[in-house]
Length: 171
Image 1 (cartoon, helix red, strand yellow):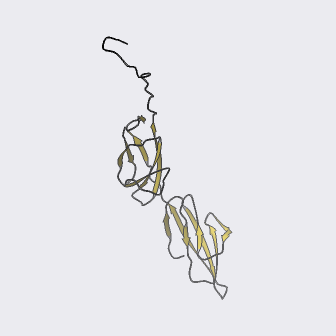
Image 2 (cartoon, rainbow, N blue to C red):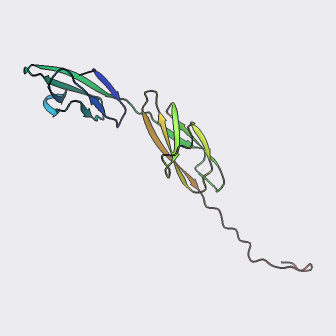
Image 3 (cartoon, helix red, strand yellow):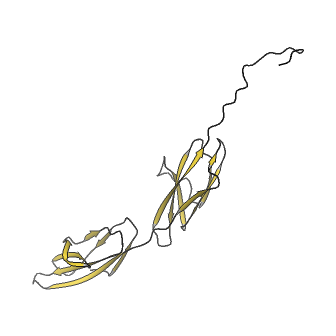
């Protein structure tokens, strides 16, 4: 194998490549007798740190083995908070993120449009809106949290029908 340790973020894949042989067989180091693949390169998607063993066979039928460990790094624990649970129309709320080194904010309705790259932002939604913050940790891995700003409906105000008054009349 070309390296002994590869690091990936949760949900990512790693491409393992062996050299020096004609045929390859990959297996889990914990179960080396059961091949899990023969392609080279070999793509793996472990959810926890996992060690693999590759057995290479050359054209003279000579065999050699090597191991490689794929380390699954920890995702940052990203937390989104707001300074109030609900707001009235035209009011603002401050959203804050913690747990990462950098952040991007989007809305659930438009998840590819970044509205801020700060750890906090002030929003004034006209309707109840969910915001997604993606945080990046020191190891380069990302994680997300979603927070919903509830916008209460404005009250209906009705003083009744308009009335005409004479200067000597009262209501």
